[in-house]
Amino acid sequence: MESTVSRVLKTVLIVAALAFPALGWAQGKIAVVNVEQAILQTDYAQKRLGEERDRVEYKSDKDEFDRLKEEFDSLVQEFQKDAAVMSQEQQLAARKRLASKQADLEHVAGKLQTTEQEVGQALLQEMSPKVQEVLQELIASEGIGLLLQRGSVIHADAGYSITAKVTDKLNQAFAN
Figure (tube, rainbow, N blue to C red):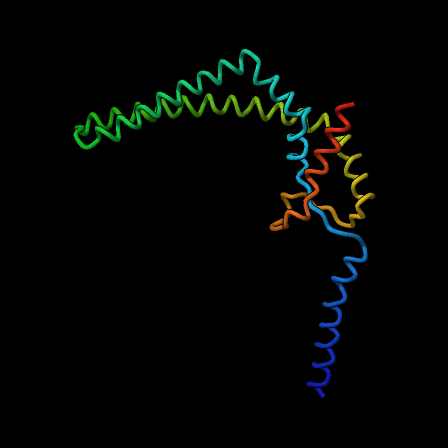
């Protein structure tokens, strides 16, 4: 008797498991979007980022970063070349110079990154209402029943992504 109940229960579970995916597809297709990427890849966002990078303060920080990077790389090469013949004191002094240069480099890199993040956040905030309109339009026109943010998904084939479509529609919207 238990084995009959067990078989019936297993059969019901298998039928249910096979039916649920079909029910999910009947509701609409599934898509994924990376909203931040869609926004930052628009022509408008690239123009704004370019304008920020053309500012004197940004260029000055970028030039300093490039100079520090070159100096750091040169110190690393010099240390690697001469480390075998250096005394302990010389190695310690060289490591201190490397650490100091690296700290300077990280500080300037942080300033550049902060500037770009601030511009990115401003763009996300500014373009958010238009993104919502574009997403609603795509959901309706493509029959999307479930739209997921790319960051919340472990895996999705490229065919599920509508990020490029969102970018294209935002380019059209901001070109007008």
